[in-house]
Image 1 (cartoon, protein in one colour):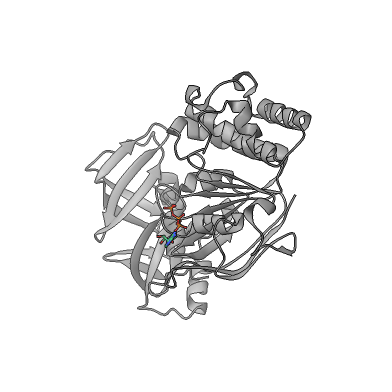
Image 2 (cartoon, protein in one colour):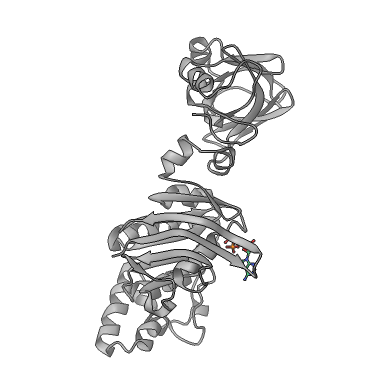
Amino acid sequence: MAELKLDHVYKIFDGDVTAVSDFNLNIEDEEFIVFVGPSGCGKSTTLRMIAGLEGISDGDFYIDDKRMNDVSPKDRDIAMVFQNYALYPHMNVFDNMAFGLKLRKFPKEDIKKRVEEASDILGLRDLLDRKPKALSGGQRQRVALGRAIVRNPKVFLMDEPLSNLDAKLRVQMRSEIIKLHQQLKTTTVYVTHDQTEAMTMASRIVIMKDGVIQQIGAPREVYTYPENVFVGGFIGSPSMNFLTGQLENDLFKIGERSLKIPEGKLKALRDSGYESGAEIILGIRPEDLHDEQVFLDTMPEAKADVSIDLAELTGSELVLYTKIAEQNIVAIVNPRSNIYQGDQIELGFDLNKAHFFDPATEQRIK
Ligand code: ATP
């Protein structure tokens, strides 16, 4: 079991590409941490620095209070699972799983016991004689996990381990990895660009952009209280709606429409120095827009007439696409609502659940 600490960590490639900038994070024992962000944001580089596969340009990295910057990868007691599985094609499942242990000169009996235990956990018992080419993608990924498990390391590092699997298998393996973590409780750092994976797997999510941490928090926390426009837009699908408008007394004005701002939100705006006439960005989740009369009756001053550009019924949801003052809006409403493309409807805004952001800094106004 292990605690990890990254303290003002930087990665600068070739003297000028800053891939990771001032990264600070304490990972507690047994946590499942997910690094998430768009391509090139520095998540793999950070993971590789933890693994020791990439040097740290500046700052310190500790495992259990021991500084690890100059410790070689094999002495870090870390096991890594990669996207491409990295299995040896000429070895069967047993030997693939045993390989790292043999290299470390574990006794034969111990190796057998560990491989058999791991193969039971992963449902690979009947496949130990097979070569990787005779396995499905999901089974190969399980062997890669098995190879990490047998070593019983202090830390698991996983770099997009599910991205080569098809959508259905990905969902299945996602829950298998979560169950595995519940069972083994090994501190895990997991990298993905998929925000759904981050939301469903993480005990805490680290959201990165351009090498800089944007927010660290539990899934529910980052979803409900995004620190900035980037996090609000990245976490959640369909994405949060952002509408630029003006504060006017107690109203948020977008073109001709005005929405009454609830007391608490108005106070926060005023306390932060925003006055009538100030431009602000409203961020509201698609599920906090409503078409139902009960809602419209309770929130009579926070609604707008809109024309539906597209209505998509997914089965469990009806997704409405519309615009206000040329700004796109997506709403998720009850699938039983009879709303079709071209309809004019009233859309209610639950502004108690919305946030305002500063247009210059893009930070949430608190
Ligand atoms: P992806 O999801 O595409 O793997 P990522 O978030 O994992 O992206 P990194 O691979 O960590 O991103 O890369 C971060 C930045 O560092 C990118 O701008 C990348 O081009 C740069 N980079 C990565 N490796 C090197 C290298 N060896 N030399 C120079 N620049 C590099």
